[in-house]
Length: 339
Image 1 (tube, helix red, strand yellow):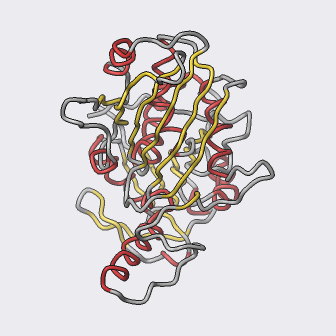
Image 2 (cartoon, helix red, strand yellow):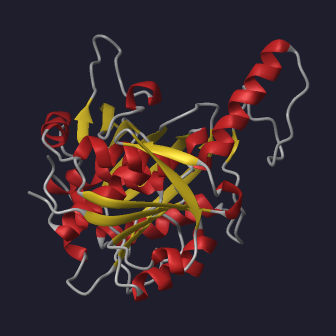
Image 3 (cartoon, helix red, strand yellow):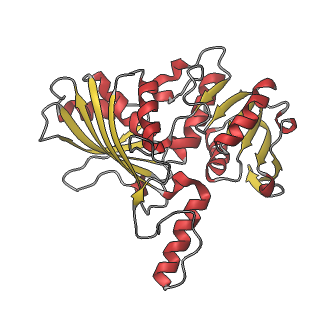
């Protein structure tokens, strides 16, 4: 029987924070005492867990005292400010932000791939970028049947990647357009409803946005393939939840057969094969929403390159792309078994 832990969620009122509460309940995570933390503007709000209302407190160093496990999902600046305090208080910290992903001393973990990167002295573990997680859960199993040389990726990223506020923006804009009403204020430089656009992050000197740069760096770190070639274009699409990715995998030699690819993916942890050519049934973000598994399908030879295969991948950004991956990390470190 698991003993109860003192658990804190930093960013409890956000889209990912709410998923933590659902996952704790559905997976039987051993929460003894629950502390919900967020910014000052969210103080006093309540969230329901196991039928009980919990009041949200402002995050502070004092609020993190006595915490066994702290899940951070409140952005990089909050993590940089408060993660050190949680570590000093003795907590295991699982951080969903980008604050520590590039730190060579901090494991960047997708449990299905590199749980062994977490050493006995690691009390801080970083959760990768959502697009990288969804991509690599699908790609990593293919290393069993060939040597991967290059990934070519186009993402179709949903509003959930921008959090609850962006999901509301898409809903509000869509209503306004359909009803011929005035558009609400938006932080974007373009309309979101019935549109798609380059991922809304800064462009670097090479012409890549921050999301693309994250996926390139993080894929190399997670797979322990520092020379992996990655070409990626990240696009935001008017889908409420779950990301989709078009992936071409180039191998160092002749690509494995489609039968070999399907066979290895059908038994891969965290993967659900959705590849019915006859019914034209393949991964979609609607089907992926609410699922912990990454859907993989549209598997086919690249007719332009005998060393490559193509596939379509969909995964729930709020679950496997964020909260679920974080909970799996904590379960792995603590040796927690699911009920």
